[in-house]
Image (cartoon, rainbow, N blue to C red; front, side):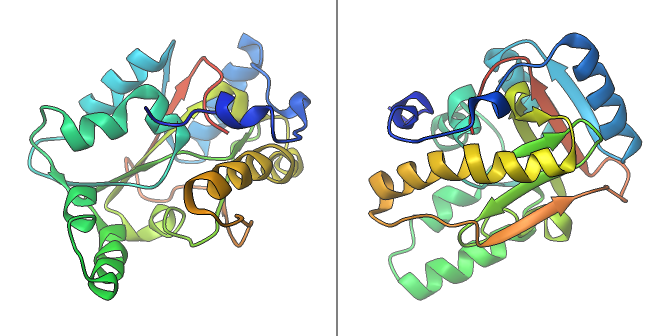
Length: 218
């Protein structure tokens, strides 16, 4: 069974004030500002609705790649992509079927240009910006340009008032939890090594944010 946020929360010291569900007025303003910044937004009530929304966005026959995301695991997308009934080209299945380390790493780099790249985000500013970071960059590398289309799935607990608060959330909520996960999953510590500030999407219809009215991911 995939690891979830609760599996790490007891071992990580986080700023819980930056991991709350905002009120409806705040969410409405956040959605409006994201849309003003060029992002398409789909707001849904729960994880099941989020999975339905994601499926509806991806046409048959396209290549699909996902960056690691606890949120995607929680809504069931990772399981759908690897085991489900769909008509997509699943790039993770191809990548992890490669035995040679160098060839697998090259395939991972090529996967950044997937027709559809899915992942999570570490913070959403109410003012309309997205903030994310990786150790390797295998997720944030696809978001700005490489992928044909991007679908970002996020719980509303990622919403914070300002861009400065988004940086704080990255350091004081997302990183401590990811660090615990990385040590358990890979035996190494994580780091805020490669950071993305996604201020605006300039290509109409390219990036969709599926915003879930639940506390999901970190």
